[in-house]
Length: 268
Image (cartoon, rainbow, N blue to C red; front, top):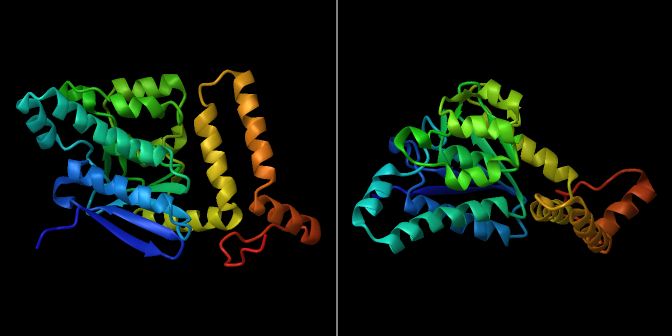
């Protein structure tokens, strides 16, 4: 029986996506990239899903690119096939970076190269002490092209440069200290902590406000301050009229408390 490349599991308002090629440390093969992109796109349009958690089956999160597939494309000598293979990963990272729901990575074992990029493209990263984060592309004569475009959204430029040029791995505790990961979980507990963190945030954050905030951050990064202020003012005005904003403001004025946004009550 053929193994499913990606496992999907609904846990109430959460969607758990498990990279499921543990014998090869869950590489981002063409099939894996397509499955992940499809699952992320479906989750983006589902009102019932509030957060998406990524993790890996077996001992590791993800070893990054599928080198066998990469070699086969290069050996084929077809420029169009080569570009399409790169575009496939571009679509995956775009779906993750632009996702309207909260995204989290629960990292155990190795998160290498594109696998490290997959984790750090998420909103939150929970790591175990034995986790290893590394951008190792330069060791094999490759470049960390796609991941370099968004690593500086998580880390200052000089720290991102060091990680991309120095392929030595960073452990879980160090990753949290430098901001590459957000929380350190006890060994074997990254997924459990990611789940609890997702529920904590989603109960406090309006889904519409969370999506709008993520969209604004994506829009304004790299803008000049004046242009960013203009975009923020427009987003501010739009959100004031959203039913969830009106509900939240009314709740606070009447009860001095904010809604539990995981409740089924959708009163506006």
